[in-house]
Image (cartoon, rainbow over all chains, first blue to last red; front, side, top):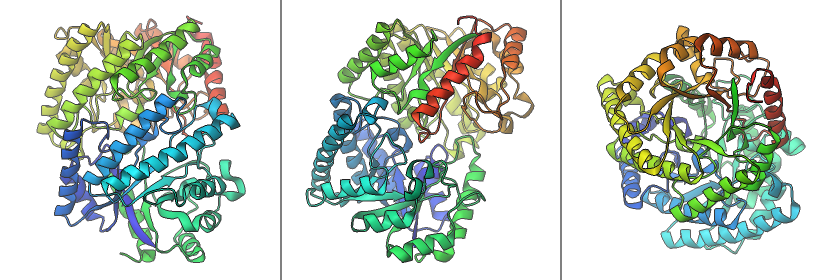
Length: 297
Length: 297
């Protein structure tokens, strides 16, 4: 396994670029993924780009960099590409392009995103769902063309554990990857979050990482790792004893599916009211727990 | 008690304006508070205003309206007024003014907000904390002047249950209200969330609504109601049996503090992966549970 860290744990805690770089430096990990809860792509462009450079420079000073930049909780809150009207979906295309601009300014080579969410009635209307799906494929093709012009290397689409979103299971993910394959100017890959992939209430007997990784193998980007009980999208750290993700399970899944070359970014999302000390302790505990199976540490 | 509903329960579920208005109409409540997880104030202004009108018109068609509009999870994710640099705080002033513009377009008369979050090192540095506090007072005075020009009636500042944010307890809330009192062009009031006010890990023996409401009485706006166990900021619905908020407790608190005239907006924030059916059931159950003590239903 190659271990990385998504900076979700630091949101609303270690925001200032140099302070964030110091905290990350202490973690002794060499792959970091920033997210758009630190920088809002909507912020006025010149100011936003300057802030992006502050983060990039602070990390460079510590010998670190961002491999990629992912959508955050803030932008996931909005309907984005799966919105209820063309106006809402057009706004999201603008937002996604601004996100790519910021990714490049941050020095990231990949942009990751969850596609958005449908309004209830669209999600339960097969015809409307299909219309939004087809339009989303076109929007991703357009986004990849934009990414190429900006020098981005790839785009990674995250599967989520909601019926009202897609892709949300191995089959819908495979369909999307096949529909995009060969049509995009840069690769559009599937990004698997282990907690989403193990979410039993939606996925039932497909809540199995071996099924996910075997099915999607030709299209896999990197992955998010979290501790979870499979009953909610927990994003726990590895101190939680009710979790079903163990070192042994991770090794077994990766070796049996031949996916040891993927980066697994720890993505912890503690409640905001958790203390900073507790969050940092959870991060450090989790990295220590995973280190024995991390080939890069 | 006057019962209202904050539309947090509907985020990522019933997004389309007419569908949202239908769902709200079914709840048989006459006070609604929209939040900025439906509309991002950063969206391009003309388009955003048209979307605001779509929501306002859809609600008017059902005989409903928004009393007020509150910040959402999305904007609470960012540092805002308590950010680590003047640049970040200036961006937030722009964002807050756009939020007021959107509130007015939605027909709301009040704008509610949590002020933002400090980066770790600022929160633990008393001098920096005080500097950010003083600047925030100036920013709120400026925001109230802007609100008055736009026809807003008041601004409501929400206390949060985090050491790294302010105000976060009865004393810091009272200080802020006194520092603003008489200096703002429209009233800036304190907005109490019952779950924040009952958060024991931070507040200890001040996690007591009678203390909060007695201390802040001259400056109180309306309030958020949630079910909670006092150990995390739960935002549960009232089906949760581990909760400490009961009808009897609500009545006792309101009558003993003389605050029966405030609107208590239910604010449930279910996990995104909870099904829509389950969320709606939780909302309806909670309203039925509270109806016997609601003077307006």
